[in-house]
Image (cartoon, rainbow, N blue to C red; front, top):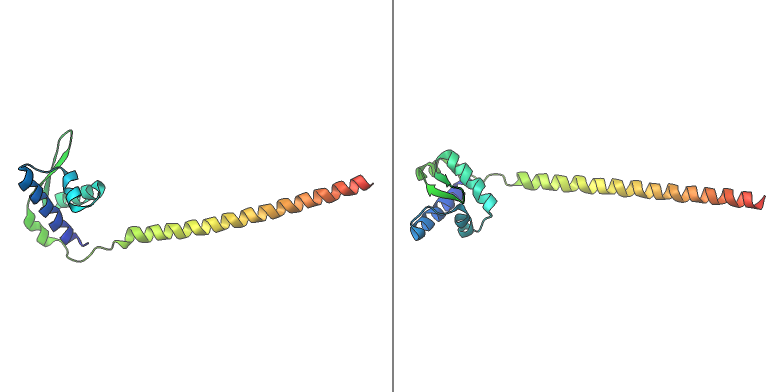
Length: 132
């Protein structure tokens, strides 16, 4: 989803909840209405607060949101942000992990072969000394 639509949805959910409860809604309620995680909601709210679109009210027990200058939404880019940054980093990490796992398996196989070879040599030496 692009930042423009994200901002519109967040503000709309805030307005609906404000209308229903006649008070600034907790950010958790906004996130539940939008079907996003609380962490994603906090991230979105911080971005929108920096722009001045929403206002955040903190008290010891909750974080509530209110609509600020909603007209600033029109200044947000309508192009989708590249979501592949996290996805591509994850793919790179998984590829590196697979490579590392292959290297570990190769090293373990080599160590096992050396171990078998060493035991075979020791067995030959022992048989040789026993036959003497």
